[in-house]
Image (cartoon, rainbow, N blue to C red; front, side, top):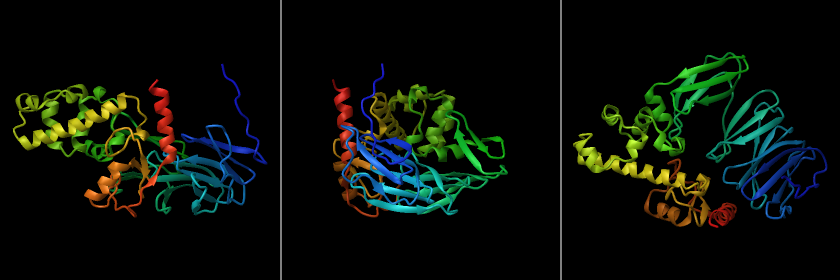
Length: 352
């Protein structure tokens, strides 16, 4: 059974797009405005509507954390807004000046893509608001930690419109306006570099193949152990069951320091598996503690952390981002009230 619970009739022209965050609904229209509503009672926020665009607004989208909203328009701009106060954070002009039809954040909120009517796609740095690059006929594979280019693939003869990695094999598919789909195969070293962030590990480690375990070892700077693990047929399930005794007696790893490092990495993996199997949304988990956040704050790198954990991080370590390893522009931590409300609502639902 489905029932209508509310109707919003505030726009003065066609509604082009709707987008949800954990606590808000955003709508945009041909009337040049973006409107924000609370999901609690669908009342419009005090700082809504958001006004800047001089022509129709075609698309709007929230960052994964929900604290930033992007909107794009026929006027050739993509605008970033602070959802808590309606402040305009940045205006990014499409290099070609063409009407911008669609925009979307990357899963880690670091990048924003905007697509225009002339077929071009532009990638923006969502933190510095600077242009990364415009789309051309090539495919570029980056190391996500260092942003170094690993490979530039140039087989397509027209704009590349899509790409996808296979989940458990060393393959990449790319599609283009030249009407072709190219299948690329990477060597193990490239995949190790491409999977260095925790977010790109397969969700259920127990289902890892021996090849996945090899990839994980490379990502942890344990490449020298790949042969030993393969010789002993260590898959995901076996990996999680390894102990200091089995590392020494069964796998014959003689170095105590090396065994300790392997055990430490496995324990980190077990902690992540536990959080994943609990069903807690990953965006509710602090990247430092890997536990459900109680008092989330937004750091100057754009990511959310548990307040106490981030304060300890800043006081005890260099002022670098736990996520990007880049220097933090500021040590200021801003309460993420939107995320906190979302976590509280999730707890109310799942702790009954």
